[in-house]
Image (cartoon, rainbow, N blue to C red; front, side):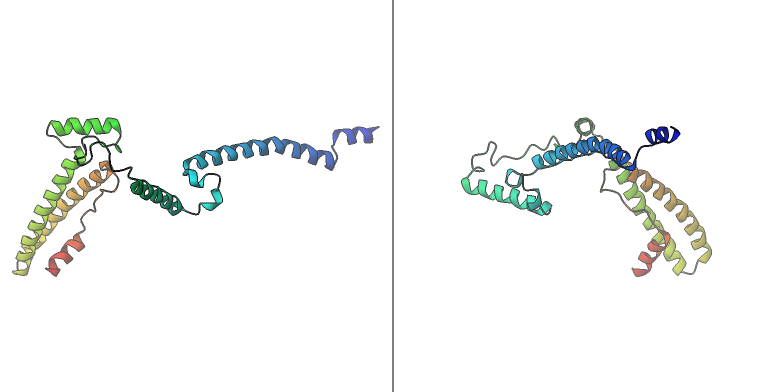
Length: 197
């Protein structure tokens, strides 16, 4: 009796395996459906010439080539001949790639003679770097004239100023749009630049 009860409570390996496979089937169906949806969405992004032929697309270059072929075909058919505003300057007052709120803000600032903070900071940094390099050149000249103590005093003050400029560069790099970051100043590189002159 106890043996029959134990057999009923503990499943056989076959029934256990069947239960595990049954649990995985619905999961597999869901992942298959999800992957089919993702494929359909990605397929819709392709030009019609490549839809349904996902294996034919090897790279982004394939898509670019098809787009270029379409443009040339349209040019040959004369679709670009009678465009509205042909020969007139483009309206660049609105940036179609910028965030609309940001674009509006920049237009308001521009109309009032102001610039974004990062533009003003860029001007300030470039001016400070130029003045700093002139001061370094003067200190370098005094060093070459034999005034070592004057060079030591000036170089310490210049290092403090350079640190201040680099702090501004760091702040600038945090707020500037991507791709417009600038490098800070390094004492050794600035000295090398002077010795090369």
